[in-house]
Image (cartoon, rainbow, N blue to C red; front, side, top):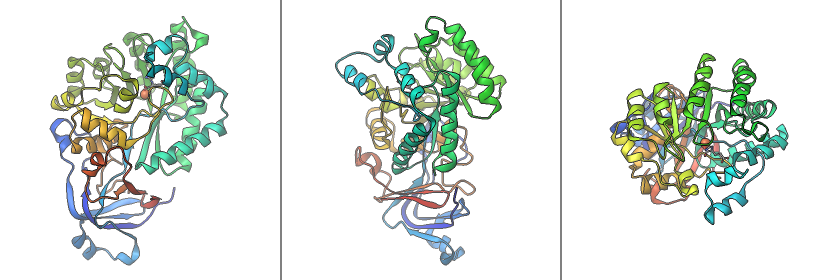
Length: 417
Ligand code: NIG
Ligand code: FE
């Protein structure tokens, strides 16, 4: 991937989100804004940050590509830390059933849902998945996303789980967006194992996990821990095995019912627990105490007509909250960052500053990359978003509209609107 030398200067607000680990509780409101700010990137890495006058005294502009960000707000590239963007086929029909009142679980129990996308993904060739993935990454980039997490979990057999992870590995090499890969073989029990959950778990743990770990196809291991999918006990068994393979852990927890996924995440010291719409107060406090990032996915709650996760309560109780889109073909077919921003600030009572931390530094922490992305700090990747407006406050104010004007990845301009 190309690495550039760049100076971005005269920014009305340069929001650094400074830090190299997750911000918890009140700390999330501290995003560090420099007025008339500038940032210097050399060989793709941030070399200096500060006031434009001070920076231009130290560096010779003629040696860099220069972007004048006068009257524009500059932010770190967004980190979308929870998506399922590699899949074949669509489920528009199911969406229309949900609009007339069917629930996500009812549709799943009558043979739709995740296993529906499994058929589409098994039938897709590697090339088809690559092309679809690339198209979706291009769309994310326009919203300012410079790092994304993507999960397998629409294969649920050896070949297709590996195929999904390999496609993401290839896309990571070809596309400007960095991709963090998660193995989600425990996303559902496929039809051929119906009624034999134990056997499916053994298959995942004995046949697929060793290959994924050995070939370093994924950084994270994830489970859909939910009533009617995988229980807390089944999930714990899988996570403990994944730990033996040195995989980092994240969990789909307490999405539809309160099951104890948040508590399990705290018990096992996971990097993140995601969804959490129905997490118990105790589970939330346990996560805060153990430093597990709470990843909230408001567009999913919105599309499922479910209540939003208690973001305000979590922050007030010392949690590190991240926000992500959960882009997937079923529960929320959207990668809209502006919609997520609006929901988090208008309906979940997060402040604008907290939402920004949740989409940058805490998103990075949710995939254990807070030391390399998620803030404009010396030594981190030169991943930058420039808004067409002078203040970060326009993010939710220009409601639901994409106001990202330029995106820079590793010091290279990769999107210019
Ligand atoms: O995060 N809840 C489980 N997994 C996805 C949805 C997958 C699907 O419906 O295809 C989620 O919402
Ligand atoms: Fe998900």
